[in-house]
Structure formats: C-alpha cells, structure tokens
Length: 192
Image (cartoon, rainbow, N blue to C red; front, side, top):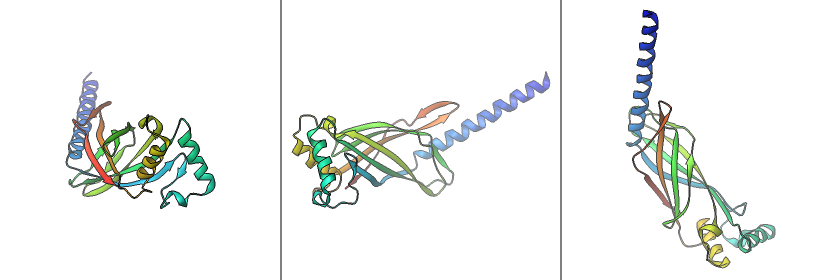
C-alpha cells in the first residue's frame, strides 16, 4: 500500500512539474516579439504569381486561367504568411496552436487555426507559417470582375499600390490535455 501511495505521489508531483513548465513557456510567449516576416507562395487561381512583376508577364495559358476565374464563381487565392517569433527570454517558449484572422487593407478575408507546434529557443527566433486560403469572389461579392482582378493584382503584389496584410494571432498551449488560449490577439502586419 505504501509503495502505491509513493508512486501516486510521484506521478502527481511529476504532472505538476510538467504543467508548471508549460505554464512558464506560455507566459514567456507574452514577452516574445511577433513580426510578419514574409508572404510566400502567392497563388491566384492556382497560378504562382510570387515572382511576376505585372500581369503582362503571364503566359497565354495562365492569363486564360485568370480570366476564367474572374468570370466564374470561384477565384481562389492562397498564400503563406510567415510570422517570425523572437524570444528575448533566457528560457524556451512554445505554442501548440494558433487561432488566426487575416485582413487585407483592414478587410477580414479569412480565419483559421494552425496546429503546428512551435518551440522558440531562448534568445532565438522561429518562423510560424500560416497558410491562408480564400475565395476572392466570396470576400468581394458584389464587385465587378474587373474590380476583383484589380484587387487580386494588388494583393499579389503585382500592382503599383501597396497592400497591407494584417494577421491577428492568438497562441494556444496544451496544458494537462487542455488547450489554454492567450487572453488576446497579437497583431502583426506588413505592406506588400
């Protein structure tokens, strides 16, 4: 009986230590600095537009796919927003999940969850990739095809006007099998 009680006490103590360590890692997240490091893999209607300078750089087939997307019911846009997390603490910080809301020029375009675990070593940086997918036709319903194409070009960085991309992120950590969310959203933004 005494051996069982000792093992039970040891297990409870061990679980308490693990939970305390996770709580400390969570509190360290609030000290971290978050910046929108880069926007990568920008695709409009499945076409990678990350490396083109203007719509005239598109080939005939890609221009046709964009025209079909503008005329159709779906105009998908996808990109990866890479958030850099800088940990100024002398100990590791970590997160298990991030709730996010994406905005372009202050208009909410998408929201989701990234379940990628990220550990940021002490006095170091890490990248949290967030994959954003949306249908521009849904986000800008009521707009003409020409307007949507102009908006898409601007968002993809192939128009002359700068576009502000903002992400609001809410880190989550798993403590004792339960997800504990940060009390508020952290705002990160950049102009492209």
